[in-house]
Every structure is written in structure tokens, then in C-alpha cells.
Length: 330
Image (cartoon, rainbow, N blue to C red):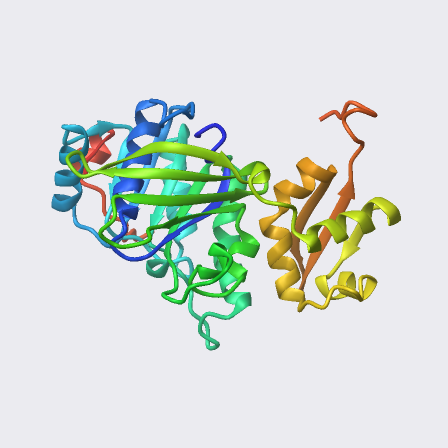
């Protein structure tokens, strides 16, 4: 997909309304479909499906023309309607993959349009299941699924706590992007990136209002910018002393009574610091649902200096021209 930025898996992309998320999604789709580097990041070319569920085809086409001077891009497909996850969205995506096996990126804009709502509204379990459904698809086909979502209005010391909904969203996802501005009228924005298989980053972006594209002005790796979370360090010390560990967050906290945290907060911190555990302490962290509970696994790998590791009625709407020619409109 996009080396060092967006890998295979399911990711949350969150930001406040009208901040420029849709322009960035179009930019991502264009670069992947064309195989063009995005800023300093190499791109692996492939088909892109963009579920622009809050737009219409006229607006999409105008946006693409404004941004890149074209009204169609080969390999970039748009749909303005789809089923929800409960109704069979994954089956629709499976059908698309059969027709386009070279697909690299699927954008779902927005989560609200496809999520399943239970009797308990947006519970942790329901949020976790919604993202898990998409993650199973992305893992099965080795594609990137980017799910656009909103942030809360309430500020938080940790930007990722601003993702609307419960911690179940980030708990199930492979990573997340947060796009923020100090003021809505600013051209500059900060984009924070965390992922299980990549280093944390903070990108400073500038919105080019003439072309309506985001330009990179600065890239920093978070691992080198902030100290390791004391909770993460304490857990790493425990694993390096006691060995590999599997169990629930509650059981892990029972082994570490000095950590006065709730289980969901512990899981949240581990999800955010997955790359820190791997890169700083050589500990591999996974979080999977097993039956009716979520199981954490922490494995202490050999340090690199010690040993080298081996490492259908279809509601989806696509223009006739798109389905026949493989050219998408924006």
C-alpha cells in the first residue's frame, strides 16, 4: 500500500467534521491507483474502492477534477451506497475482490453509514465487532481498509482518546490516524499515526487551498519524541522477567497490582504502544477475541543482537462507465 504509513489491515482515520478528511481520502485513492509516491512514502499500485457514502457522483467528479485536473482515474472506483455490516457489506466487498483481485485499498467513508447498532447502542462489544468484521476481510485478502470516523468535541490529553465511540474501535483495529487543527480556519494540521506493525509518527501537514490537497511539511517519529509510557515499561519488565504471557487484561492487572488501572484502559495503552513494545523491548503483543472474552498475548522475542529472528441484490451503486471500463469518477 503506502510503505511506512498505511499497511495491510484495518485502520481508523478520525478527525472533526469539515477538517479535510474527504480530500485526504481522495488524495490517498488517487496515489494508490496511480502508483505515485505520497510525499516521501513509496506507494504500491493497485485498485482502490472508495465508498463515499456521504457524497454523490457529481460532487466526487468535481472534487477529483479540482484536485488533479482529471475527471476519471483508471483503477479508482467510487460507490455512494452500500449495505451495512449487518446487511452484508463484507459479501459486497468479496464480490468486488473477485472482479478486481489487484485491489490494494478500500476506503469506508464513514463508519457511521455501515456500522451495526445493537440494543446497547455503541457498546465496547459492538464497536469491537464492527471493526473485527472489516479486519477479518482485510486480513483474508491482504488489503488495507481505511475507515473514516469522527472525533469527539471534548479535548483529551491523549489524542486517540478523542475517537468517537468506545475503546473497542481502536482495540480491534490495526492502527489509527488522527487529523487535528488548532483552529478550523488554519491551513496547518497535525496527523498522528499509530500501528501494530509500524513506528508511531506525527506528520505536520499544510492544506493547499488552490489544489485542495494536503502537503507534508514535517515528519517525526513519535518513538524518538516522547518517553516510554511508565505502564508500558512496567509491563515490558514483567514479561522480560517472567516470560511469555497469555490471558485477559484483568488477569494481567492481577499480576501487576501496582498498576492501578481499569482493564479497558490497560488494553487501550497496549494497543497504542504496540510498536513501542516491539521496537524498544522486543515484545510482540496481540489482542484477539476468543469466545466471549478478549485474550492478550505478550511474547518476548530474542533480542536482535543475541539472535537473528526468522522471521444478491446489491445496493452498492457504481456508475455504468466505472463497472464497464474500470475508470472511477470523483
